[in-house]
Amino acid sequence: FGDSSSSSGWPVETLRRRDTMADYDGDLEHMHGKLGLKADGTPGYKLAAKPQPPYDMAKELKANGFFKRLSDSISLDRPVQDARHKLCSTVFYDLADLPQTSVVFVFYNEVMSTLLRSVHSVLNRTPPELLEEIILVDDASTKPWLGQQLEDYIKLLPKVRLVRLPVRSGLVKARLKGAEEARAETFVILDSHIEVQPGWLEPMMWRISKNRNTVVMPQIDSTNPETFGFSDGGIGCTLGFLWNLVEHGIDTQPQDEARRSSRIDPIRSPAMAGGLFAVNRAFFWELGGYDTEFGFWGTENLEFSFRIWQC
Image 1: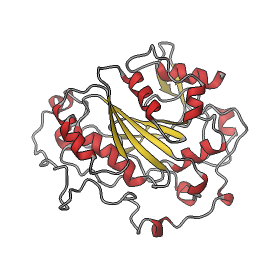
Image 2: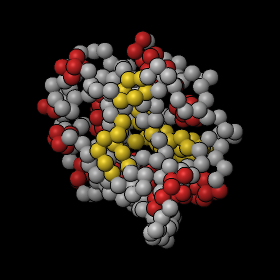
Image 3: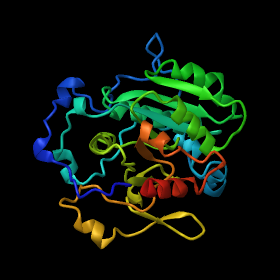
């Protein structure tokens, strides 16, 4: 996204295979080790009992948009499906050539289980060499579990720090705070109720390493809000926009498809998703960052998309 250079697919022949199984003791689902354990080895977060039917699903979904009681019963370290194209598993990256990143989660009154599962998934499936830190930006939440309970738990996690805004400032200003706090060469914005799949970060960092003026967004698949099951598809890699300034998915344009030599080559997109993207930190600020007059969700990603193309 935002790259007007000629096609540059993944150069598999130039990438050096990396023995990740040896590096991570054969456990690619726990790249930062076992998480959330207290000194006595017991979990710092207690799962709730699985809810039993019958359910009033409309009532269950009303407050959060998903089945909170079910989420509270699901492991923070649960396995996820690998929905990547089969060619993705044939590409190996020399991590020494990739930039490090700061992962930023912004939240307001997020459910504790979904927030922590998001953090665990990043720690579990991100090579330590690439992850500088995870920054949690709290936009003045009021839920009690996001107070001392959250602070106590993140002490049990590596590389995680919490930044609290003194007053509710809105999504855009909270993300700006995360960008200001980021220490790594790049930063990644993620929603606070996601789970990353295997190999999620390396291709985005590789793309930025080849052109620092590229802003990269991942394929965003779906999680069923009632069952928490996974499904392919969701927000695709090509986004356009409507005249009311809301992004929406569009088909990959023929001229952009013609630039690709492989099914796993990156795809140009006219617009970006606001909630999940990776960017070189210096380039973000050279473009002026987000417009500080934006407050809550919507439009800021399109305005930033236009600046990426024009600047």
